[in-house]
Length: 614
Image (cartoon, rainbow, N blue to C red; front, top):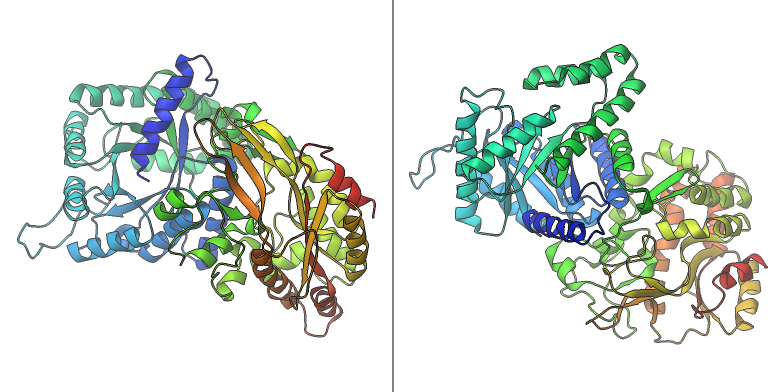
């Protein structure tokens, strides 16, 4: 989707709420910038960070920077493609003239298009354009406005285009600010959609810049670039290099604590909050763009304070921000084809969404409205890429999370429990943080895992929650949402026997189980029965059922789930060791079980109490 369309939608919605007196949010939207690290491990860590920040805060978009002379071409495209495809957020990809000829520019734009990226930040580049003359004899490009024209000429309206603005004037330009604004207007007239500015620390500088742009006839959105202060030395270095004006009061707040990085970071966050609120309250903008420097903590601290607390769930060690704008209960891919078609998914990959997207990316069509008949679709074959997980880090990182040398089942149970308690951030089956609704099940889930029910997936029952509920809501205002209680877990053969007896005597419950060899067992699950687990009713729309259980698809997921024991856990230990044999025994003897409580109207704790009674 074009970012300009999203900006316009958010601004219109924000102003409508404000007009109706229902808007208590201090900001309409925000976005994040990242740059490609130099190493593959750094890239992996960054992609994990992007996933985490996007899941936590739902930015309007992220942008990925570009090294001079295309020095980061591969890594920039890798990160941008990942964010667009798997993180479910629209990407603004930087593109500079510096060191690029016309053929290379087309190649990059073609690759971006193939990756589903629809937005470009068109820049000249620090070293100036050195694009060679085109074969058509049009001459060489030396300014960003020519890059904007180039994109529009060869790609029409496919790409949304942003350009850079400099509220204090470009640090290496000999032009006066008024002359730069004239050139900025030329970029907009050439086809650019909106402007992102260089960072600043004096709010009046940005307000004055916006006024000058408006007086010049530039009426597009102008997003203020904001750089959180990480340390006093980096703050000084960046402001001096860019010629950024720093108000006296900012230096007065930072100078007494300049040797205390932690204090500088905290005060710097408050300075940034004050800056954001000042430019928004002045009416100069509706949202801000954070230059994160690939760091998470400062941006998180700022947004935690700026976002209203009613959107936050503070549970134990975790604070998760529930989105009031969820279209569906799960995060959609930002790829245009999927986002327009897909509105139904099986629940099984809820905590491994990237694997699901990868295994279904070759589909010609995606489920829309209904999952369809219970016949297993053609899921992509499992390959090494399905079991490589940058979220789990290196082998050493995995050992820290999963155990140096576990020798008992109780130690394995404890790993699952610690994930639910937030002590460890990931396990092989759960690459994402806990969903907000899971916090309300945290205590029974922790107890179940310590009893040996190793849960991978769960949801509580919901009976007619408002669709704008901050925890359970999705689909927009005016509707009501429902869901059946569900849990999916690994259990031992002994527990399987007890559980099957329990479910057989309880008409509310159904069970479907499979082991590593594909042997299945079921209670109440029909051969071709597809069960809606989540659904919603809305004005002027048919009933939506975005999350389902399909036994045929569960069998596909089970193959992947069992292999994760070996590929992500067992291979940490020496073959034949006690730890290796322990994981081998769990893999070979346990069942993966799905249990559905069909009574979403009755006692919402029924399923959890029944399981804990075993």
